[in-house]
Image (cartoon, rainbow, N blue to C red):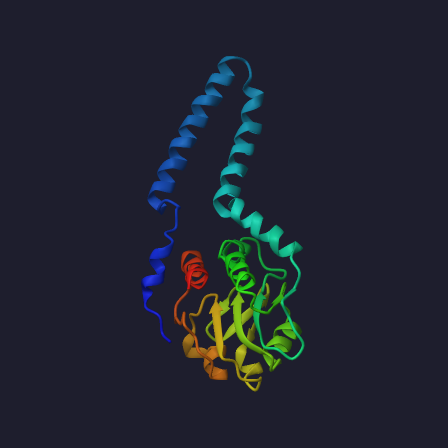
Length: 230
């Protein structure tokens, strides 16, 4: 089943656009300068540098991470890796490729709605196996498992592969002889289609959120929300 783009209206990214962001930062800078001038006038100028540093770090962290990022990271660190699994029964695999990435790359993963998807599967009592900090071995293992009939992949990558660590992308073609899957969703960037096929295409699986472009955090959240409300 190929879904329309209607699911994208479920969530709208709350962040302001780029121009407004720069204007706000500019105004905050002016206020900071005025504040430092007042401190200097009161002979408290030594407080200016620490205040500016703390303010800058706070604004940067809030913009690039946020509380949802921290909640999801804590959630993933403490939840079990298996739910409702029964011997010999099919299950849904959730792969999270968040192992030793470059700074700034975790934002897309932890803010992308993986928590919503896992809780949705749990609420439906669907058997789940979660692969955290995916490696080449753990990814190959779950893809080749005949009991894994659905697979959701979170992380960074291309149409043809998944980024396992910093600058290493594992081509999906290296595991193209794995067992058939009913459904595979690559909830990471899917640009670079000219270099190869998606894992869903290689294994003949259904792919409802198919794209040949980069994925935004907003789009990944909407995919998870669509699953949550389906």
